[in-house]
Image (cartoon, rainbow, N blue to C red):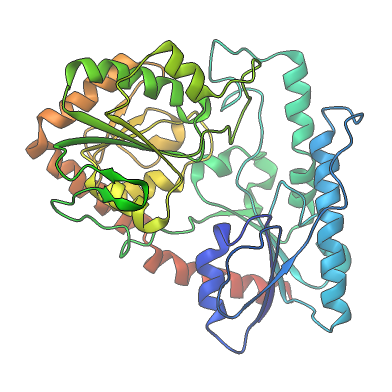
Length: 406
């Protein structure tokens, strides 16, 4: 097979698929991306760069579309170079939304085009209207509608689409559902597995919690409202009064990955620590971690907190379940597709630090009862999200997509 992967990041959602395809010397694979770091054996990486970004004078509704078009142009130029060298893919497989897939049916009209559809934006019914303290305005409604423009173009032109969860697929217009298959990327359960009596010791960042009896963990790309960071800090302020021996490990960057920055220029970490002064001897901000250290955090976790608006489900929640973490998670739609309260995790009101802290204490005080929930957590991933099962299915679907389009 000849395949062109497209994603601004690398290897992103295509890590496992590209890796297994790269092992077959009969396959010829290219991966066009913005990211220079990283390699996969058997995969030829090509870098594309936008000629510029959207101009400041462009209407703010349209800037995301202008950026998507500029991204698409950059990818088109890379694709043209590959075509000039005699490469014509059987399949182009790219992430929709940022723009890389927009012109692929123009330059490679006979190639099968699969788009990875992660999210469709809505003013109401999901993430944008979730927080009652941040109501939707008419300006928001219009801006959010236009943000879907490159995604709608992909929906119209792709041969097939894929979405990782039922919840995420449900966000897309009903008339396109027949094009979108639900199939998760898969969790490497042989890597993300429990380690009984694991201790947390990360000498690289001078973190030694090997003697700690209670470790509450939290993982997110950023520290922001979308993933419940403000509620987390308030929860910690409550727990520090009630659990004087408890340590808290927060993995993530001090940034906003989704949603809005604070208007005053402060980060949410700065703002929340001003509002809720914590004993920072027991709160450990690690930044992002390499996989080996991140795994140690999950394996040593007494309780893992996962909070999210009704938005894209984080891989980290599934990885934590696979590791046998006792998860206290928000009772929101992406979570409840996976977690049943009291069965494989504990559910809480996203907006209630009091309830979150109560359930963390419940978990800490009842380790024997929680052992069964931890076991069920891992079983959920083994049954429904195990990479060993899902990757062969994904590979077969890719092959079928090429055959059915010829």
